[in-house]
Length: 330
Image (tube, rainbow, N blue to C red; front, side, top):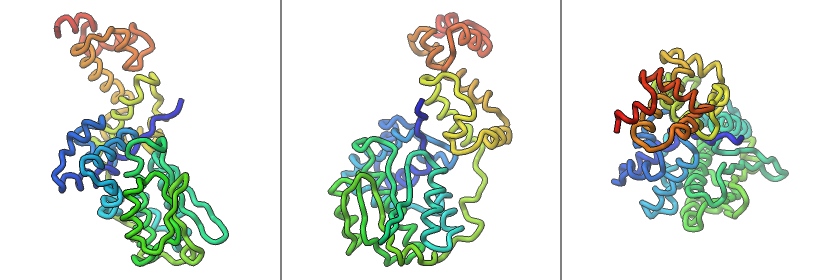
């Protein structure tokens, strides 16, 4: 079964801040995208479904009327908030190492984006795609946004005046390509199946300017409550379609190992089993008390093998059967 694509909520924080400054109703946009009202402010350890995150970006484009919104927001992003970008620069001596490191870090940081390097005779290409269908809402925004982050990273190493010889776009809308071309005078901008930045041979061998220190603002403790909230969000998304979810699978979606996830949950005073049980309890009380779903349907929604297992769990939670609880709630 294909795993659910998830992405760090921190990728939405800068977008949310930009929209707030423009006076837009961010909570409404989040709601329309199927995301929690505080998703853009939750922190590093909160994850959201990639499809919903992309839809939020698309709705933001529509609300502002700006087809190049992703390009604009990407200019204001604080790259120090993104561990992948900081780590890629810290250990790189030249641009080739910088981009190789960035590919490695991004692949471990999120499953939303395939990234790779394609060496050729005249240039090396830094290539990136998106995990959703070509015409999925939000893909134009995300491609522009990520393109600007990558260009800013390269310019941090090569100098602010650097312009790629060739830039390939795949998802960016034609109206958004105009300001990109204006910002990169002399660059050959073309269309292709994936986005890519050409790095000529001289640029690849250039030493990286201004490498960050070993300690950076991203090397900070992560709030345990954010980890628990993120874990609940992932489990909630996986319960119905997959049934019981093994901790190793969820740890992979959260970008960590099973042992690390269990250790950090212990530091937060809980366990994987406890978080799963509490989530099922909260959802069960809501579904039994506030919907007309049959008990067998609720059991399936919560990932139980059958109604009998669900009934036993419900009795343990509230000391009465689901049917009796529903009658009293009604």
